[in-house]
Length: 222
Image (tube, rainbow, N blue to C red; front, side, top):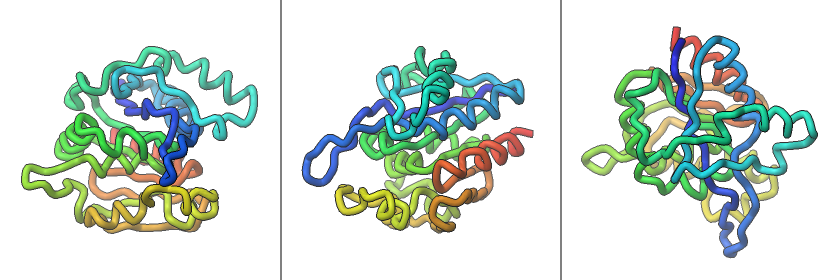
């Protein structure tokens, strides 16, 4: 049995470029699908959030009662540990789901950035999906660069943000910021499953990529 740390946004709004607070949170599919894959494979999941706040799902990602019930059944979401006190060395793998929430909090969290830097350097599997790669923006090496520079990754694309209707309102676009870090950004077709693996790093482009990212993380766990 492996132990897998889910680092989940604690934000319930995303501040748009006009100052509007857009309701958000984590994207349900990006938590539920990997959680199911990992636990059904016999692994244990721990959820961490900034300040150990109980995370909320983006309402747009909860289309029906069945999804709401599936979220309610994940006890770990109701008792998260404090991200600031979390050591990635205590876990066999780390996983970051998305939703627009990470654009608000994890993108500027030095604690999350340090955790990501250590997780990447450890060689243990690290999975990041959709808007979860916003957290990569806070990761820094000792010389101030990005530990992810030169890695081939994917994430929610500019085209997808435009098609979702939020690109013009966003304070910044994730694909642009990641390219500025020096990553090798690999965009797939909008909304289609697309997963990229580079060394111990697994990234998924969008919600539809959650299952594939979980599968690759399990493969790396052996």
